[in-house]
Image: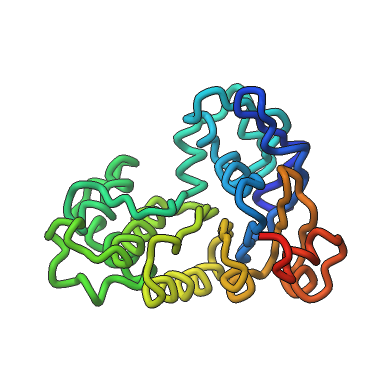
Amino acid sequence: MPHVQVRDLSVWYGNAQVLKAVNVDIPDKQITCIIGPSGCGKTTLLKSLNRLLELTPAARVQGKVLVDGEDIYGNHVDVVSLRKKMGLLSQKPQPLPMSIYENVAFGPKVHGVRSRKELNGIVERYLREAGLYEEVKDRLHEPAAQLSVGQQQRLCLARGLAVEPEVILCDEPTAALDPVSAQAIERRFKELSRHYTILVVTHILRQAKRLADHVIFMYMGELVEAGPARQVFESPSHPQTQAYVRGDIS
């Protein structure tokens, strides 16, 4: 059974319905790209997977999101544990106002790690996983704000990995980056997908074609088509998907 299953999920912001009865399974340890025109519900779908929609005023959710078989919208769900399991990488890097080292160590400390030796190992491991360690190993105790934007995004990735999530949710994670930094993030995703389930919202069709193992195509709040990337990009079954892949819908 996949880690993440969405069943009849609908979302409203006030009176405006932005997701309409979405049903989809997210393949484990693959990169799933969520694509579609602006305003089609991509980010809303992503944020519904770890209850971040609760931070949006007037948001209302109907349906189920099952993570390891448990409905995350159930009454007794521990939201802190859920968000530890489902990490989020935002569009704009948001490092904490502290050192590079403390950014990565922050989550493990919150969850009870106190040993300096253990924290040192965690910081090095996840900076390496994010492809950043060699660039910062001699200045770990300098402010994270001194890093370039691309480095800050990889630091945020390391910070998210340090709490050992099962799923990494990425909301247009390269939108604020230069092409070289964006390529670095894409390379990390490819390597990390051997161990993590990764969902990437992207408005860049070329990026989805480079990254995706699996694709979800959204249009006007509906899931139009989902399947293996090659199938969706090379022989889509729905006319709207065909039009989007051709570039007729943007």
